[in-house]
Length: 305
Figure (cartoon, rainbow, N blue to C red):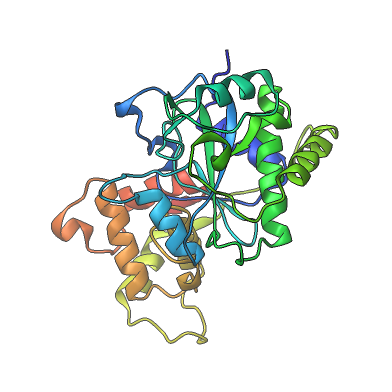
């Protein structure tokens, strides 16, 4: 029985394979499980997005559309090879496919040409969307192809699957063409080669790292003051720690984490306060101890008055 690991273990196995992973919002609990089960799982399915721009692609894959709610996959593989986790559990990525293909995946044999759509694939597969226009002209950078290889190997390694357990959307569902432009025979060879090499074990006792400390009073002062212009000295360095945490929560663009508690950071922090259950004046973007400690607990910093 192939049961998916818990979300934290899934994140760990991707990072152990050498991938750069970004956690987007509350990805661990963002799923379509109320529509049906996820698992047993039997393979990994790779797609292309027909979108342009990483931020736009991640947003669409996380939120979905009116007719097809998100998440539309478990992870988005960007052009630079970064994996953005947007959901965990049942996701709207595979749809109905050919039961004969699923049998081939289970037995790790070459899949037949899909000619039916009679089997629930959202239950049976991990899904990864790759940022690509899908027109056969948009290039597949080396970093992105390597990330596909590493993602696939990480999951196969966990479940003790071989490379035949990784398929394309076009293998699964009649009429699909994705991921167009990827040499799939070469990709499966790459996955097999990677699976032949064990993942290096981490040090038995990693060095202790003290978490950063954020001074609440200094942070409040920074939030209430007029935001300095970009390039001017940072008024309080703890601001950047908080901004980086908001980036990891999917509430602030990474380019805006500059150490100044400006209007964008106020807006992002207000969104965090609302996520914590605060309303009205209590969600005005000026940090309070309760909301800040919750953020620190999730993102690895401590709070002092």
